[in-house]
Image (cartoon, rainbow, N blue to C red; front, side):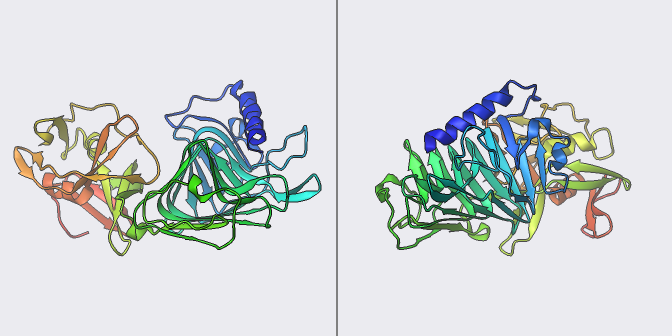
Length: 404
């Protein structure tokens, strides 16, 4: 069954690898079909289905689902096998969840027995989520690797077939990783299959502090096939729940929170940002230092940014931004990201200051430093505020005040 699924995947992706698809960023999505729509030919990738529920950003490789209902699968015209995934992709894909989403393309009858169709098939899948977002999957998720940070994802696979193996989640060769949120996998039907299946050295990696619970029904595959890290006690595999609440996760996670910022009292500009949450879930926004330097360049609050291994980060106030590195205004990554605190003092105009900052590392090992916007306003003496009417605003020509 596994070989047949990936043969179907290969044939379809090979077909539209020959098409003139625009070049993609580091995500390397090599073909994508969603709910029967070929993204390469979608009339509007920002609104794939025409109802505001599915969007795809070709520049970042992020597929955003917003209260989406995916029910149309890819069919193999040669034979009625029960593959039919609603999402079929090659390469690396990130799915961002907003609201409550469902995926399921029904059941098929194969050799007289019933089993539920696949839901997602592909290579490397990453799932991120806005707070409170959910994804309910009826069918099988079969990927080479799966990484989840946040959100509540549940997968249920029905299999009443006596000869065909089916799992709720099947990972081929890579790692099933949960860094935050809840992943629930369950199999029903009492035939061949289970909650999680692994092959070719695949493993499950869950950070310490996760909860792991299972049902008491047996499964064909031995539990020893699973490799765990963290506080896990596997007993059987027909029902698996891995839960790591975002508010309690031991991994430091920064939450993507791009902001529209009012500049100079009128202009609205988009600023890439990440937020850290306190123990009550309240976010505080941080911006990348170089993005802000490029935004404020040539104005009253302009500043330059320099870095060296010996001194770390230095800020030169009231100086043109003469040392850009080419990354300004772009997002080197997408979705929620692990971060490390930046603990070195920041040199501001020759004085060392302990500004709250953290760093996110990209795939190439480059570190991107984010500072709390208000801290930068205080340190460089430009005003930063927020109001319900204006949102976040920056006033470069006014001194900093703690009053919004």
